[in-house]
Length: 503
Image 1 (cartoon, rainbow, N blue to C red):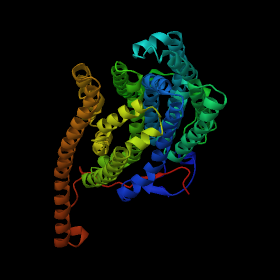
Image 2 (cartoon, one colour):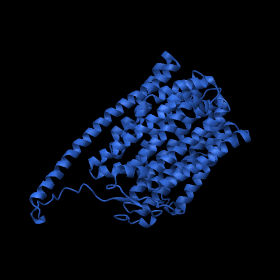
Image 3 (cartoon, rainbow, N blue to C red):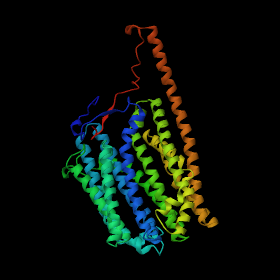
Image 4 (cartoon, rainbow, N blue to C red):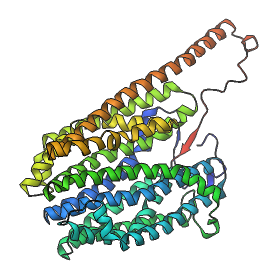
């Protein structure tokens, strides 16, 4: 049961076992909170990978076209991510404070923003579609197929924003299981319809986009029903659509930086594909397959760390440095083991894995070389994400921003601009390898620094606890014991959270 039930406990969205975020062992907490997010994000990565697998049977041009559209889709999705992160954060804080109507107003405001911006951006992009494709460096050979794919993707752009929006809001109210099942259903629909649309109906590249569109329609419809029907803690209804400046400001304060970070990543992907395009569609296709394999391995790590955010945040807020250290060490152990195993599989069986995506020897050869560049340092990718999660959870925004821009920003961009003119395609791959190595070195150094600082912070707390124990032994009667300092708060406060849908 909840130790201190919030005023809105009747809108918790389901009963079940509770988790004490400051007393239960961090490994147990992290696994319970992270597992649904891992499964959901992995399903999301799988249906992107399945798309490329089926398109590989159409030839190199199809893979190249869709790979070059991918950065545009990331850039467009960044808008929804920004709206979702800003809305989910403020709505969660309002729920925690017991301001139920303000929470519903925030959720409804974010929903309206997603719909209005989705329609506006998709219409503008559709109107200037060829110009957008040229800006992102799409090659002339891939232009017709890329145009066909992007046109259908734009038809579902507003639905994509609603899917992202619903996913973040469900997670923000603790319903990671619901988010997981929605993403699994979307993956299943996409996987079933892909071969039907691509091959049976002979739609080719457009069929892959159409299958994704149907999956997005389904996911968006489920989320709309979930919030409108009040199945969770948040409600979306016309009576809450007030569009007040205070709420918009709160959404923008967190949403804009998050959107800009994702947009920066999209631009980095675009530069990679644009540079690869100088060496032909085989290079674009080979690198595109490898980057999808990278995404397939990265998203479970992000999902695991997403589940750990609450544990880190509550421990840091309680001033329990020892608990933060325990959680971070557990996260490092799990993510390093997964990333090392995943990279070992890719590097050991790269030819066989690439053969699942393409039967073109030239594409497979480039993809194999790209795999070494992307996965040689992948074992340390988990440390990068764990450190980033820790910095964001403890409010260290400057350091988090510095780390966030490292792999796709100031470590990658100079190499992409300088090395390909000197070494050709090898220069492009070398720039990715160097960026990964430098990011691993930076992450390891910052982790050692931050963990050292946490240990120093926990030392006075341990000493204070020992002194109090010694004092109590000298003065066993409560009346004789030295009184606690009135200005010092207790290190532990019982905080529990109920996971909706858990039995």
